[in-house]
Length: 128
Image (cartoon, rainbow, N blue to C red; front, side):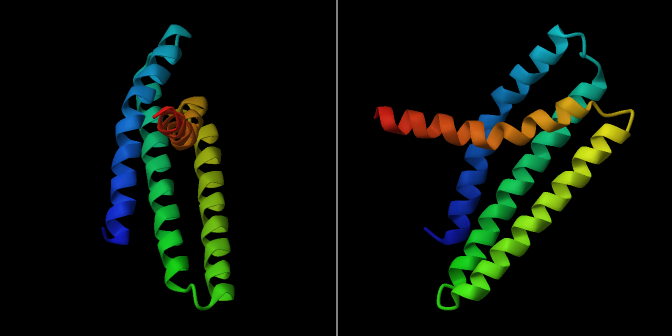
């Protein structure tokens, strides 16, 4: 299997795992009285951004692996990608807080989906 295919397979697995989490998240927000379209849009935006970050991490790891003979260059690339992702996430969070047509909490919660999915997959893998 090619390296890029591994990244895409993992991205698909994340996307499939996000669908039920998005529904649960919306259900919780709806029970709390935030059932408006802004909440749906915010959850979709946060989920799409979380998938984008996951893809970027995969690409960054592939790039670093390509430079395995030059570890200092690989490390610099990983740090640069890490900082870029953090800055982009900060911009997203600030925009979610400042823009009145977004629900900031509904944008931020999906950013944890990838970690939750990986945790669940590891637990299921250990049970086998």
